[in-house]
Amino acid sequence: MALVRSHFVAKKIFGGSLAGTRKSTSAPKGFLAVYVGEKKQRYLVPVSYLRQPLFQDLLSKSEEEFGYDHPMGGLTIPCPEDTFLTVTSRIQG
Image (cartoon, rainbow, N blue to C red; front, side, top):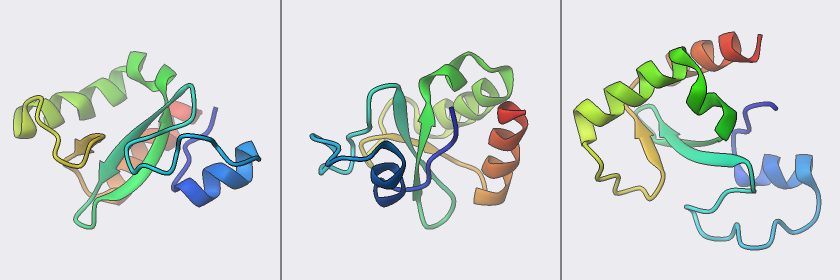
């Protein structure tokens, strides 16, 4: 599964209306919303990434900075967007 940058891209990839994804915290089945970078760009990542050591490192940084309180609704990853994209591209292979 690939990383998806926004609701509009997700809608294009998955087709249909993506019922229930109108809320900023909603994500299609099998995906998790994360917010990255200074502008808090929203990405949808496959839940399978949660098992990946590289992604777990990002989650640890998130826990250190925010604990379990994420005001954006999804997980906020405290790293530059380009770092996040590098990590996720490595996971994708």
